Image (cartoon, rainbow, N blue to C red):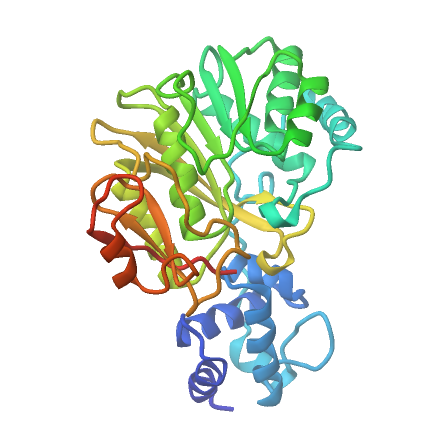
Length: 377
């Protein structure tokens, strides 16, 4: 069995953007963790579940992966690929860097009760609720990094009810933030938070529009779990940056799922373009009740502001945002070089970029536009 040749064949058969290294990542996870479900491979290899499934199917055709489920190697492949298992992930925290103290375990029951009966996730808004454990971990991350006590915190979207978790944590421990504010377009989510955490300030607002003046530059910490599209990340991070006080050292906690190489590069580039620095990136920090294509997980970026931090989108946004808003090859967002407004080309309004340039930016009249990455699933 020529594993190197098989890897090349499988990468070509699947059309894997990650190339041969993507196939080798899948094999590494299987050899280490077998038997393992495709969702488990997806989380570690950072490939969407459908891609992992396609790779495994090609490996089955070539006698590398057994035909049973969960995924495991054939005996012939195991003789070649199996090696000593030397676990390096912390058995206590599972690689998250956080352990829930025993005295906080009571919070799990309270947060489960708070989430019970909460508004159902709205798929058209890319909502997928995180688990109770993730709610606890996010609050502990805020506390551990000095981004909780005495800090004014804004949540740019909060269908995960992290504001409620913060309020419960503060009541139990006495570690209290300055203020907690939620900005969300979903009135049902805001109504549920109002009942469960009456001390939280609420603002019903569509983030396609600039933040209200009262919220701009008013916070020390911003948390956001945006739609898992590059335009979604750019818009939500821009609003998060706009909410921070204009000084270095502000905190941004940004949850974002694993993407394909081009989208990951674009996301990390926009973090740099925003003038943010990455303090830490924790793989699979967040777990969700759903989000099957992403294996129910996303990463947590802890970002800090600098003297060069500034929003990339300051005006209104008219381009694609959620995963269902656009289809590759049909539409593409363009940002006005003059005012930052974003417009969607490939629609009835502007079929081509030439038409947009001819009419000019509706917000400022500018005629220079920067193409942005297309949204994708």
